[in-house]
Amino acid sequence: MTRSLQNRRILLVIGGGIAAYKALDLIRRLRERGAQVRPLLTRGAQEFVTPLAAAALAGERAHTDLFDRAEEADIGHIKLARDADAIVVAPATASLMARMATGDSSDLAATVLLATTLPILIAPAMNVRMWQHPATQRNLATLRGDGIRVVGPNDGAMAEAEYGPGRLAEPVEIADAVEAMLADVRPAPGFGFLAGRASGNGAKAGPLAGRRVLVTSGPTHEPIDPVRYLANRSSGRQGHAIAAAAAAAGAEVTLVSGPVSIPSPADVRLVPVETAREMLAAVEAALPADLAIFAAAVGDWRPAESHESKLKKDGSAPAPLALVENPDILATIARRAEGRPRLVVGFAAETETVLDHARAKIARKGCDLIVANDVSAAGGVMGGSANTVHLVGRDGTVETWPTLDKEEVGRRLIARFAELLDTPSTGP
Ligand code: CTP
Image (cartoon, rainbow, N blue to C red; front, side):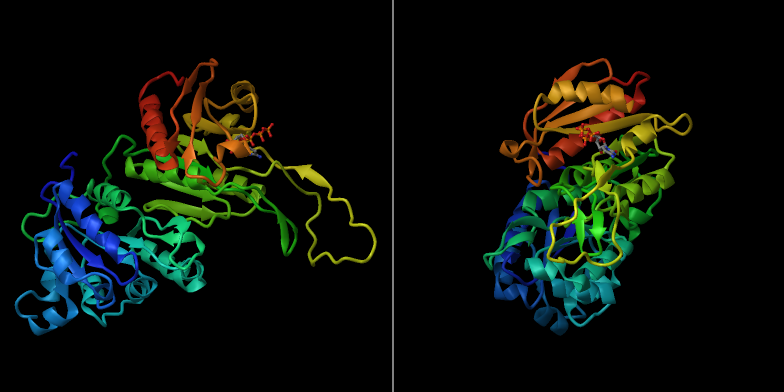
């Protein structure tokens, strides 16, 4: 284990909820990496874990509302808000997010979060429907706009026997996100307020520092009428993981995404779209870029006609659905005479003879590299968390990678593309 957070001081705000017990493991993970952790428990958190347990694991006193109101003079909330390198909120409940988004300061945790200028990372965890509620999504957008970073939530089975996004990110993922956030914040000498918020302190470090990266992700929705559309099973996880890795590598990232139910990664400019034609327009508007990665599962066809009002059954046979072809976004950009990104990467989602199709696709589309994967149902790639990819170069060379989770695939792809951008030739 590398001491990658050596001497970093983290204020860990533990929110209420069943996932609070995982915050104890997070304390352990952060300390393994060398961080000093100071826990602060909300009243709700104390229903699930005790301040004593958090303090014992952290090796520091745990702060709670009750205690600190009484001893404000001793360790005031302003000092708590400053005396660290970063604040991590895990689990971030719907209520804590709402309080942060509205600037409410009705308890110690919210007060500290309002009084701080430190970089903040939140790890939301809540019931699926609470996460998907427009109010929570609105708060999330506000918090992102305020420069707050977000990790998770992950998909999974929830305590209430429901399935979907809402599970707290794993402690290791949260610790990784803390590292990424602090990578461009210098350690605070003395008080944390000397370190600026990560997203606001100018030039970023990393192998893609100073580069502009464009990523497409997710499916497209092609409307049939106001309530129906043609779509596919893409979750957006691979494209979003690539965008996250590019941002962590210091790039200025634009993520053009079709409709997905996963959160946008921290530190990327998200352009949400629905149809292939909207995606093409958004991609063209986002140029110039040094690197463009087309990970979206763009619908090849759209209904020839999109009806303005809902189609009704009229007792006779259903009308046949006529389709027309969508523009090929990857080929359009790869074949641009002017303003073509230096490195253009396509994906090939295949269900058979993966490599033959990928080689043909690279020639047909004019890109520099294809990341090919098998999306047949047996592989579970579409919507799943792991991926087995083959990197196919313009000269037909192939590199096959082991099965990895999509986040790791994203990081390795970005590391590879950064190398290629730094060398004159562009093969895998
Ligand atoms: N792509 C795109 N615009 C489209 C279709 C595909 O930008 N209208 C991009 C995808 O983002 C991906 C690559 O092209 O990077 C390959 O997509 P895929 O659907 O696998 O290939 P197709 O071109 O659709 O070929 P086929 O249907 O024959 O497999």
